[in-house]
Image 1: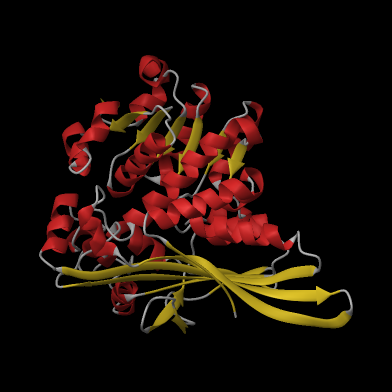
Image 2: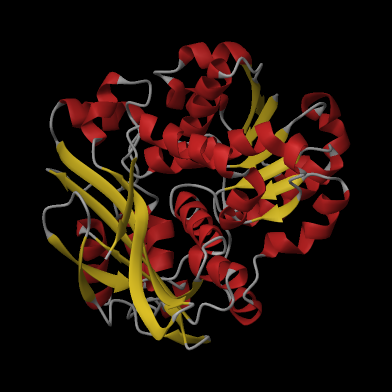
Amino acid sequence: MKIVIFGVGAVSSVIARVLYELSKKSSTEIEFLFVVRDTKKAKTHFFKNVELLDDAQFLEVSKFDDIFANPQEYKKDFKKSTIFINASIPSYNISIMKLALLFDANYADLASDIYNDEVMSSLKFEQQTLNEEFDKKSLFSLINLGISPGITNFLIGERIFAFSNLPYQTKVTKIEINLLEEIHSKQLIFSWSPNVAIEEISYRPVFFKKNKLKSVEPFSKSRTYKFPYFKNFVEVYPVFQEELISLKQSFEDVAEIRMFVGGNEIELMKNLYQLNLLSNKYCYGYQDSKISINSIIKDVIPKMKSPEVIEDYVKDKIIKYAEFSAIADISLEISYPDNPKKVKSTESIGVSFNRYTDLLKTPYSGSTYISYPTGIGAGILIFYTLLNKKHNKIKGVLVSEKLPALLGAMTNDIIKRELTSYKINLMNSIK
């Protein structure tokens, strides 16, 4: 199994490690090729994973576009590749997908470029334009992997698939996803790229209500939510992420789909937004130089720290506590054969990662509390999809909620057990 990963960072190093560990458990031979711009910098992300590098090679290029423009020059590097993983920016998705098709490899990515008018008007991901090409070659393309989107979609898909096998009619009327991003630290520490976060937060949140797409102002229409395992109530705000488009595509009969996010990292972004510091308007006196308040904030805001620095922050208790949680509340309308009255119910499913400081004792030390569950979720879904590809004829461009029906109950249970073995709590309750 040859894994080609474009870009090495906080998430991709976790993906590589979990793939390495799963391959050892299943006696599967694995090798890595990391496509990077700076090999020395990339290797710093494996400072606790040096044994993984024994089965790894690095292809250093000044820019990825050189590969896309001249793929045959890299034929020797990419031959017999099993899967290409885009762990870089979403704008490379299509180029890497075409590269995967050229070398008869499967594909996976972590996010889509959704903050544009074309996606909003079509409600489709750019990667889905290549579905026919992957299908014809009996290759799969897993898009929007991670913990959320990714594992959350997988769990929602598994549960809704199960409803179809019940002896009574069950209709899903609403899906609401609530995210918690909470970190307590003595310093301002970002767990994801501030530039990406600013772009996402500044975009008008959208949601589906009565099957129609609606939008609201950022940080409006907030509500209070209680996350499992977390002791406090949290103010959550509407947000637009891949899950909304994906779930509406997969379950078009669900009339209402919403998503919210809360936690102290989001509160910081809310303060910046309400102070008008995320504005794209030009600064007074700088019209000719095209300098906006937004661009200044992006330039001066603290960047993500290296894994070694993050590890030291945990050791020195600069980071005291961190938690990520993603809970989907699925509203149901149940019709029993002998009862004309419909019964309403809500099932909550999701994940929580609240043992962040325990990572110090593992090869994942130096990960952030966001990159760790994201990489674990993506790695597990990739590995077990590859393992089951031949048996279940998995092909085409797939979103995570489609996997449970394709993989089957046994593999679905294995995936959930693997998640818990990596300290990811799974939740399932009926309200």
